Amino acid sequence: MHQKYDYILGNPPFIGTAYQSSEQKNELVKIFYDLKSAGMLDYVSAWYAKAAEYIIKSDTKVAFVSTNSIIQGEQAGILWNYLFSKYKIKIHFAHQTFKWKNEARGNAGVHVVIIGFGAHDINKKMIYVYENINQDPLETVAKNINQYLVDAKEVMLIPRSTPISDVPKIGVGSALLDGGSLILTTEQKNDILAKEPELEKYIKRLWSADEFINNKTKWCYWLKDADPSILKKSITLNIIINEIQSFRLKSNRGKTHDMAAYPSLFGEERQPKSNFLLIPKVSSENRRYIPIGYMTTDDIITDKVFAFPNASIYHFGILTSIMHMVWVSYTCGRMKSDYSYSNTVVYNNYPWPESSTEKQKKSVEEAAQAVLEARAQFPDSSLADLYHPNSMPPVLVKAHQQLDKAVDQCYRSQPFTSEAKRIEYLFELYEKYTAGMFVAEKKNKKK
Image 1 (tube, rainbow, N blue to C red):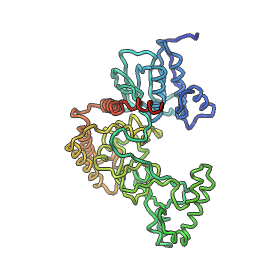
Image 2 (image 1 turned 90 degrees about the vertical axis):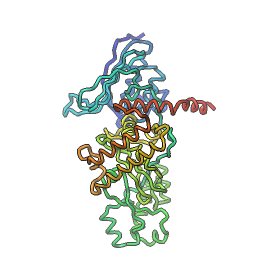
Image 3 (image 1 turned 30 degrees about the horizontal axis):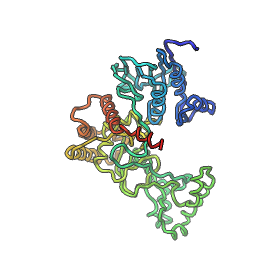
Image 4 (image 1 turned 60 degrees about the vertical axis):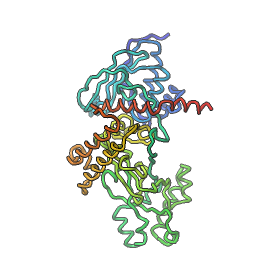
């Protein structure tokens, strides 16, 4: 029998899934042999699993410094549900995300967490909250610490194909799979229309997250339902269609290769058939709110954004509120340190207000409309300008504050005193909404 210790302390290597060697990936699969989604885990996860296995039925305490990716997005659900259920570990203390600078050359800073845990429970648990990632933390006592390092029960936050609340599904935009042939700059557009003006109806604005947030102009050919006579006689379109066909035929991806038979179309077309609300997949963590906005069917979107078809002003108000943003900050994955929004984990698991009255909904709608009107006062400013912490106009700040109050009232009458209280409330509501779901899923699998 191996020797037991009082403590296991460490700073395991920070290696994300995209940077792991074949040997490291195989090590993860070996350690998480009974976990289907092991390939999505960071390398540091192996230290948690090995430590949890080592300390079973002992009083040994463990503490690791880790990248904060292990408490974000889909990975948080995969890793911690595994540790909680298989090894029955309890988190004893946690430092929420802060910026850690090592002693390496250049003094590079990374966003990390510190998590202390054991295979036994303790009465007094501590959470260290960083209101600013560069400042000292505030110490708070917790009854329980879950995988998102907040005082709440452990939650089974898993990817879902449909929302847990009674709201419409959102979907990702289209993938071009064209080698760049369908995309145009304004200068290219003008040059082509000077030669073939009849193509104007087939050229539309193209929106990815960058174009939407920074108000950049990009165009694309949109040839769905195009008149075959135009496709046949246009010199420009014939060149483009041949380029796309050649590009797709060279692809090793089966679906892309098959789309060579349809070279005038986007490789994966998911354009909304009605006006919609656009939600960028990636947005800066420095913004208090993710910029979202209404678009029309003539606005062609890529797979870098989500579309919420026929979204009401009430839907817009909830999604652009601080309540939703707190949920985003704790549950979404990250692209570097930026928010990486998802439909399956973030949106589909978000607990919308349980029973808003018509009066409360109307308050949200009026406040949400005020946000849109405040934005409209600055037509020359991009959303990046409007939502930057240093340049957000006071009229927009006030409009959002009023909207936040209106949305809060849809959840409860008492005001929330902190972000921690908001996320604790949302996790409790999530637990209420999903009670019985997992039991039902297990029964269906058995059948």
